Length: 393
Image (cartoon, rainbow, N blue to C red):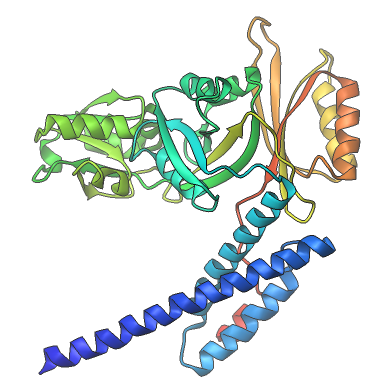
C-alpha cells in the first residue's frame, strides 16, 4: 500500500513538472516579444529597478504560499538570467542580418569531455544552427582552423580565477586577424577520475593539462609521491586513463567529461580555489555589431611610446571618458626586447560616443593600437534586492 501511495504522488509531481515546463516555455515566448519591442524603441535589455520590484513581489507571494525566500530568489535569478541572455541573443541576431548559419563549425582544445568542449556546448546552445565540433591539439591549430576557413568559430580559454591568464592565447591574439565576437564564463570543477574499482591510495601516475596541475597544486602536494604527466587537454588525459585501464593511473577533469569515457570521480573539488571559473572567448573571421541596448565589452591591444608615464597617460583617457577597465595584461613583443604589448578589456561599445572618443585619443598617443573585438557581455549579474533582509526576517 505505501508503495502505491508513493507512485500516485510521483505521478502528480511528474504532471506538475510538465506543467512547469510548458509555463516556462510560454514565459520565454513572451520575453521574445519584449525583445522585439526593445529593438523598435531602443530600450536597454535590463531594467534593474523592475527586476527588483518583481523579485520583492514574488518573495512576498512565495512566503504566503509557504515557500522559502531564498528558494524563490535563486529560482527567479535563473529565470531572469535566461530571459536576459535570450533577449541579448535575439538583439544580436537582428543587428547582424545574414550571420545565422545552418551549421556552426567550431574549433576548440581537446576532444569530447574537455572543458573547452563543455564551454562550446554551453555557448552555442543559445545560437541557431547545428554544431559541428572540431577538436584540436593546440591553440595554434585552433586559430589556423578559422583563418583557413575550415571552422567558422574558435573557443579559447583566456583566463582562470585560480591559475590566472593563459599567456599562449594572448600571444596568438597579438598576431591573428580574427575578431573576438563573444565570451562566456564556465565553472571549472576538477575531479579525480579513474576506472571502476581504482583506489586513491594505489594511484602512481596522474594525467592532466598543465593548467589543471597548476590549479590543483594543493591537492597534488597532499597526494604525495605521484608522477604527474601533462597532456594537451583534459580530454586527452581521460582518453589515456580509459585506454590504460590500470589500477594505478588517474586523470583530473570534469565529472561530466569523465563519464563520456567510462571514468568515475572518486574525489571532487580539487582546485585550490573552490570558486574556480574559466573565462573563454569566441573568435571568428568577421567582427559583430553589438546593439547599444546590450551591455558590451571591448578588447584592445596597444603598445605605448617609450617614455615615463606613457601607460598611465593612456589609461587616464579611459577615466576621462568614464570607461571602466576590467582587465589589463602585458605580454612581450616578439623581436623587441623589453617592450610590452598591453591587452585591455573595457566595458563599452565601439559604436558609442565615449568609446569612439577614447579610441581616437589612444590611436594618437600609442605606437600601435588595434581593436580585437567588441562583443556582448554574457555574465549576467544577479538582481540585488535592497530590502531582501527585511523581507526574509
